[in-house]
Amino acid sequence: MIHPLWDLGGREYPQHRAPGPRHDPSAMGPGGQRRPTAQCVPATPLWRLGGRDPQRSVSPPRPYDAWGAETHSAVCHGRGPTPSSWSLLAGMLPHKTKRGQAALERLKVFDGIPPPYDKRKRMVVPAALKVVRLKPTRKFAFLGRLAHEVGWKYQAITSTLEEKRKEKAKLHYNKKKKLMKLQKQAEKNVEGKIARYTDVLKQYGILV
Image (cartoon, rainbow, N blue to C red; front, side, top):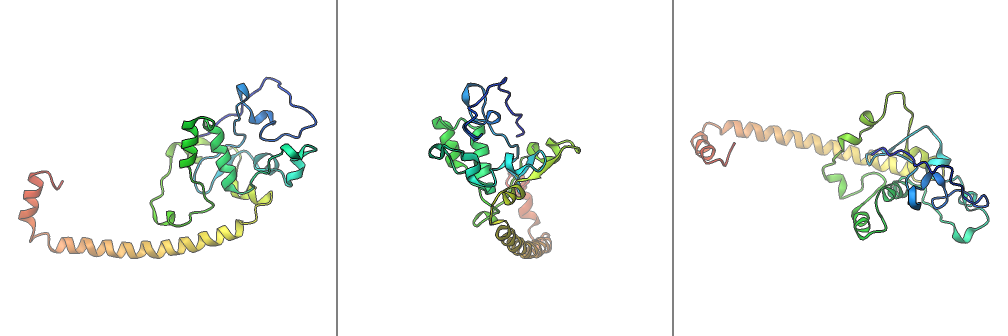
């Protein structure tokens, strides 16, 4: 999931245009294809390779700083972690083909873990974990912190909702542990009574 930046071999862009997603050499690959300039993995929380440089990693402090004089062709970028990570993943895909567009339609990115996904099992990609991808001496930054420093206004709200979600999840997990303990005790109590049926089920491969 860590992708190096593309080297354009000294290609220049017009000086009267401030670097943006369409004109930034570091965001373009061979053949004029867009490539991401920030490296992160789709985990919670998202992190980015490199130190704290919010003006280059997420978006400028003010949109007009990047627009310059030609505001009619400018794009106002989202400052939150969700649009930043979405555009990052879109740059990794062939988003102009039908296959890439179908993949992006299936992609869902959220700030935090809203319902109904808070009650579903979370998965991780072991090969994309920070402890596996980065050396201990490399700098990194969290995407939420970078977004907050460039104008994202919902960091406090998101963190408050996440704390409430974790408290509810903790109560649910403690209740689930008690029920599992009672279930194991009940199975142990009737183990002798159903032993002959269990042997028959194991004989036919129904129980292992």
